[in-house]
Image (cartoon, rainbow over all chains, first blue to last red; front, side):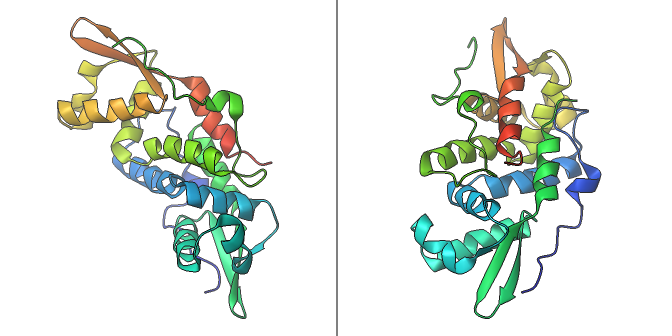
Length: 113
Length: 113
């Protein structure tokens, strides 16, 4: 794995907002998919741990979370597929960092019209 | 139904942020629950329709959405339980409006530290 690809439609460009005009089906689908990545407490804790540093080694996520390595891998994969984090493989570990512009785009989606 | 009760822990007061310190389990659970309400395209479309006016009659949601009344009711209930909308029953219809401070609190949870 090098960098994870972002989904086809880039939220940072298209920025549909929930508080503007009614969303069409495609916009709603895209946003729902992104919010689904945030709809899990383990993923939110992982995201907050990764956001707290420039990058975080996958080897440092398991212990503070108290979860198994497969569980951690499953959730980092989901976060990466949603474009919220990117990973770089070095040796046997993946080093994760957040994608700030992606989190900003989700914030923007909830902004007042 | 008059106004929907907000969940016990008020996001607008406690404002844990995903991009600050690592979230503890309670904070992550609370935020995950709120984001789960946004993790569905029908609910996002409903929310955007309700956000677009001061209030929206439940009688006006079914047609533009192309969904059955039970489906609409199910999803408005989920949004209301997450504190994102409040409803007031008048006659046979419920009139919904958004809870701006609640959406602002979720925005804040995604803000840079």
